[in-house]
Amino acid sequence: SNPKPGSVLILLYPEADSICFPLIKRPAYVGAHGGQVSLPGGKAEPEETAVQTALREAYEEVGVSPSTVHVLGVLSDFFVVPSNFLVTPVVGFVDEKPLFVADPIEVAHVLTGNLWEIVRPDAVKEKEILAAGRYRMWAPHFDVDGEVVWGATAMMLNELRGILQEYQQM
Image (tube, rainbow, N blue to C red; front, side, top):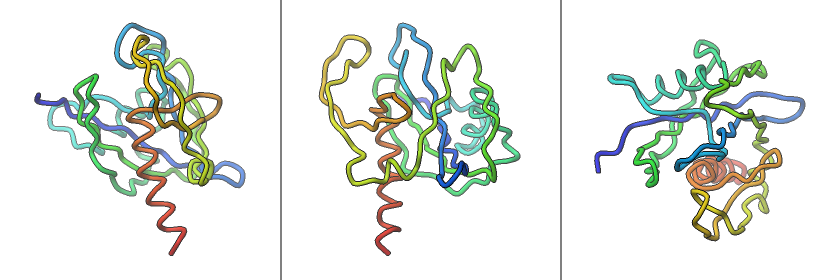
């Protein structure tokens, strides 16, 4: 009831011949999202828009200056049951790869996702996941930079994947 508003940023940037995006691995802690891989983001402050939240959180978590981000738009809002958040994924790009500076409290590691890898027909995999450290379930996921990306983050990336696949077919 009364979900908390939040936003994440899918930040696209050029690297070599690819378009990449950062993901963060959360530190291991007791809680719904400890040790999981997610997009940079978090809870909205009062009177903040979804875009403002995503840009602020990306700055706080991985050091990306909001003034460098060109916002392309937003994807569908997503309700995250375990944490009672209604999350708006914001898509943006920067002209060059940022120098990521991980917040030592919120981010254990910054991962590199490759946009072309998640668009591949065989990108979505399925395996048994241990949710919240105790619940076993079969879940679709992406393999990104040696990590399993599942749950809300995978579903948000899958929506972007679907949009890009439709565009490729045009």
